[in-house]
Length: 270
Image 1 (cartoon, rainbow, N blue to C red):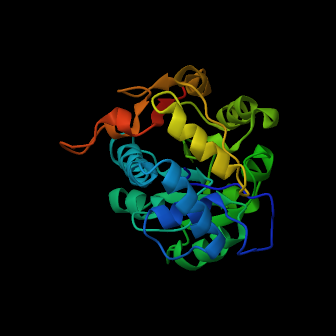
Image 2 (image 1 turned 120 degrees about the horizontal axis):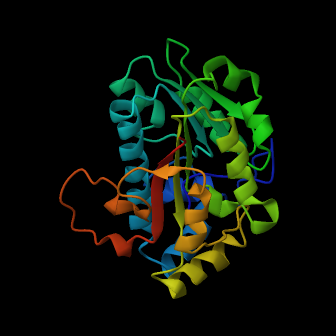
């Protein structure tokens, strides 16, 4: 399951190789995916049919988090890392609806994502940009000219790592990556994370992991306590780290939170 992508390739689109971004687009009913993405997505759905629900609820979490950050927390700078393919309710659309002066930088290294995002994620005011960089190299993001053009790290910023950290293997030091991002944030900044966990559905999660192992983006599941570690240097916003349907829901839902085995939370740097 994945919203956001980290491709090994940096500039070549191979339609035969399934990617997290293409599969997620397919789960959401999009059309910006290739045959390889669809074949792998069908295998995941066979192993874990609820992946379609996971994708929708993860996207809703992202949208609620951005709305909270722009409207309630007063954030005007957003750094969305591992943005995935553009769809309805993108970060800049929600943030700029709440605050016209909001600035958004999208980051991905999937060439397919970049091609579509540069075409669709634009604003006349020039307050939105898309850059090529890899989460495994935080400095390539923080120091990028477009990031520096739109993001003032002396002021609070909202960094979004939505459904991307589970594509960072333990060998790539995901906790160190998050620490480096947090170190660059000014006090008052926020970090939003969602992350797949195998805790409530280990059998289905294991089937999903096996399929993703054959794609460009293998998955690493983490437990609640392991996901909680990403927020070690931050103070949680209520309700803390929860299954994403339970994070500040818009209204009554018929989805039981534990049916969606993605944990989500937002933390603030003090």
